Amino acid sequence: MTTDTTTRQSASGIARPEIKPTGLLRQSLAITRRNLIHIKRMPEMLMDVTIQPVMFVLLFAYVFGGSIAVKGSPAGYREWLMGGIMGQTIAFASFIVAVGLTADIDKGIVDRMRSLPINPSAVLVGRSISSLLHSSIGILVMSVTGLFVGWRIRGSFAEAVLAYALLLLWGFAMIWIGILVGSAMRSVEAVNGLMFTTMFPITFLANTFAPTDNMPHFLRVIAEWNPISSLVQAVRQLWGNDLPVPADAALPLHHPIITTLIWTVGLTLVMAPLAIRAFAKRTEG
Amino acid sequence: MTSPAIEAEHLVKKFGDTTAVDDVSFSVPEGSVLGLLGPNGAGKTTTVRMMTTLAKPTSGTARVAGHDVLREPDAVRRSMGLTGQAATVDELLTGRENLRLIGSLYGLSGSYVKSAGADLLERFSLTEAADRTVKTYSGGMRRRLDLAVSLIATPPVLFLDEPTTGLDPRSRVELWEVLRGLVKDGTTLLLTTQYLEEADQLADRIVVIDRGQIIAEGTPLELKDRSGKASLVLTVSRAEDLQTAADMLRQRVSEVHVDEAARQLTAPAEGLRDMTRIAAVFEDSSIELDDLGLKRPSLDDVFLHLTGHRAEEPTETEQEQAS
Ligand SMILES: Nc1ncnc2c1ncn2[C@@H]1O[C@H](COP(=O)(O)OP(=O)(O)O)[C@@H](O)[C@H]1O
Ligand SMILES: [Mg+2]
Image (tube, rainbow over all chains, first blue to last red; front, side, top):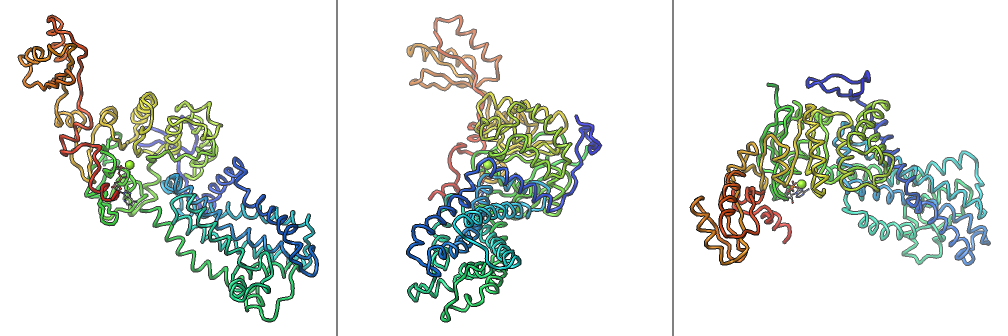
């Protein structure tokens, strides 16, 4: 047996190690680390933030780009497109959280963690951190791909940083939706089904891939009020990739940055309690 | 005598209209083994989940190492290890990484986890596989790793939910050996099982539950005595000898059951001594036997005796859920 100084003799004579209370941060990081090892062992998990968005960039930039002229040129469209794809990629952070959480609940990993002397939130915090890192890899890959197809940041450095910060903030709000969905669904397949049938329409019915001006009135209203549109518009403005907002566009598009902030705070305030309740209900039953 | 290591006090758990656990109380003295025996759906997992702070009792409470599960859940978690019904090790991590993850969540120092982890891997014959991902492990290896992970902090109390379900007989016997070692070192064990034999092999006391209620409690010997004796089963080679054999048997035992189709006779027997006595009788006769054996009461017999229904029959609640 180990004669480590951190062990003590119990009444029955076996050396038992001292269990030091650790903080939420250390516990969450241990779980984050484990989630990152998963990515290392199964790099194909990153396809959703690498190959898929890169494919979208190329498809939209070169297949549709020719017929959607922005600033009068396909190059203009390619530059304009980047904010849209980044917005879509970060919206899928919810998906990443949900899939990971459902898998862990399903396999009993969450129960195993809950049987340990740790803060029960560590499972969620660890999952959130690793998912945000996961999505950030996507944002990074997008940025590099963008540079190759002619995308440039034309605003100031501070504005560029603010744009990335808005994307991350949005990812943070998405985490709660992910926890809610992940706690409510019984299998990874169910999460996939739900997320594909909701997230794709939501992220397409916006200004992500095509300007809203030419949409039929009914769709245009939905698209312009879609929070994804505010985020995308804000990011484009901050990077200097935007088009002038038509005077008749819906209110959020005229104030995209503040609207995005309001949405992230609002979504978090509404979704976080629901998510935490759903998680508790699912795991404590 | 010290206070019990595990105590359940009137535990009740309801899921909607279903009462999964219905007023279950028992206590396990320090350093001993309790077998919680019951068929599928009896409420074993739910009981364990309540005692390990994973589920809140609808009413009642439990204490682990003197700590109340409701009032001091963290102290309970520090005092016990749990191996759930399905192996909950991480498939994408290696064996060593699994130990490290749980060790660091316990707040153990890195150097301690390293050396204690290596000891555990050695003890569970996993050293060679330690740096392979768990995906490549067999069922038995996963179970052993799961147990090793639960032991990283050397908890004084260990809960094992059906630790050998799904294992081949050899792995099962190996795991029993490991568990005996733990108990010898002073660990208090609560294990659930569907097999009387397993409870018999490991437990000092057995609590039998069915449909959420305790229906019997005692040492393995007491339970087996209550649920009927062992029986002698004898198969004759030629059908025409069956009646003669039955008559010979009747002179020596009180009651003989004749199964003509199987050419089989069944009679109550005390043990091996009875069997050799009967064997000698037939040895001297002209009756040829195909088989002669002693059948100990199985869980089925225990159940049939205690509850009047067979263990594998679905309980009412399961029927409700199926419809
Ligand atoms: N989360 C749950 N929701 C509803 N019913 C449940 C839940 N967990 C268990 N049950 C029901 O409670 C009963 C006992 O289940 P369980 O404790 O898993 O039995 P065992 O472990 O002995 O097989 C079963 O009828 C089961 O269907
Ligand atoms: Mg069970």
